[in-house]
Amino acid sequence: MNIQDVILGILSEKPHSGYDIKRHFEEYFSFFFDASFGTIYPTLSKMEKLGLISREAVRQEGKPDKNMFTITPEGEQHFQKYLRQPAEKEVLRSDFLMHLYFGDMADEETMHTLLREALRAKQEMYDDLEHKLQELDKIGKLTSSQKLCMELGLVQYEAFIRKVQSALES
Image (cartoon, rainbow, N blue to C red):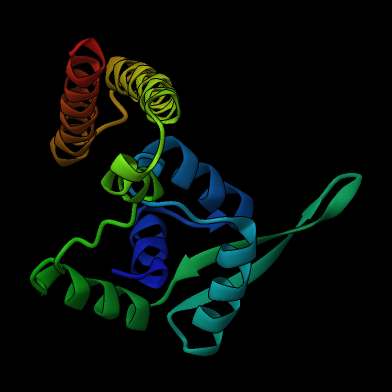
């Protein structure tokens, strides 16, 4: 999976501006895929050069023109090819887990602080994702696959929270 595939998926629903694409990442993907404007805009430019998307400048009253991006037939073929491929093996990179792995080399208070902070952050992420899921589900903005995706994110967060709470209590 790369950012091009994700952007093509977003654009297959309807045209979006770069800002709209960034908001989509924040609203739907924030628990498993992150992209900044510094990644999105160069990728859009590259995708346009490859013929995967097209760009149309839309005039706005009192504002700079807004660039709207649309998937092309070539982009749709590329995205369908991505969907037919087996999912890539997930790769986890976690600075928290690396600190924890070497935790026996640190003092106990440092490790307890690490665990408490990780617990706080993960609980915040859980609460945010749960709120997003409830809000989007309430207004009918989620397909069954999208809802399952978010529910699986909650399950992962919940398992992490339970395990860290248990470690802190022992």
